[in-house]
Picture 1 (cartoon, rainbow, N blue to C red):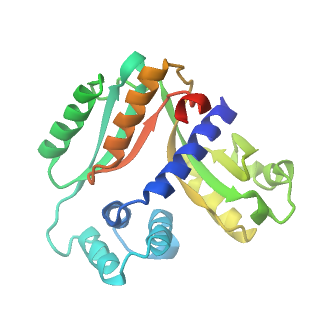
Picture 2 (cartoon, rainbow, N blue to C red):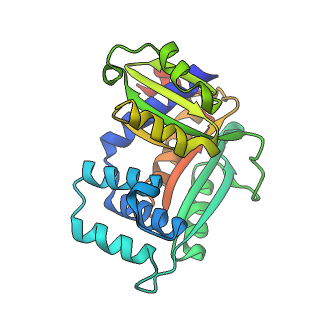
Length: 246
């Protein structure tokens, strides 16, 4: 399961980079990180730290970042709420959506229309609770480990009940319990590792193989969901198929 998930994650990461994440999503991530923590102290707010790193990567103007922080602190009356949607694509592929929206009616209507268009259906909240598990994940480029093996890294993090340290396609992924996110992050910082990405992810407990036709339609559904400004993250349990993707 681990390798498959990693494979999907890396392929998705490459696609996301190629599509270049929109300003809107990065700014909304900053806003929610501030809102959820109730403050904008970067050192005590890991979610904000990661969101600000992304803002730098995507060259988001500082003015926009400052506005998003103000919004998060409730200084301009904006009401944005986080809502999750759960549904199924073709052949029972599970799709879990995390959104941050100022208009839930608009967002749910859009999400439902995307599912309808690509042969899926929006489910009831909680319908996917046994399909995904939430984990703290950290991705590091293998070359940034300065020669340390995955076993050595596992030993360094042994105190935090790490699930897995695995290496594939030049990236090393660390998975651990959600509640240890902050501690693991601090430890990796102490080890002076530059993180490619980190966050709380929903990992599929199993993946589904589908036909070429379904694979294409589910990819389109994921693309259109990810293209919606209200949607922050899309998780799924589609088995990646190299031959279909080409």
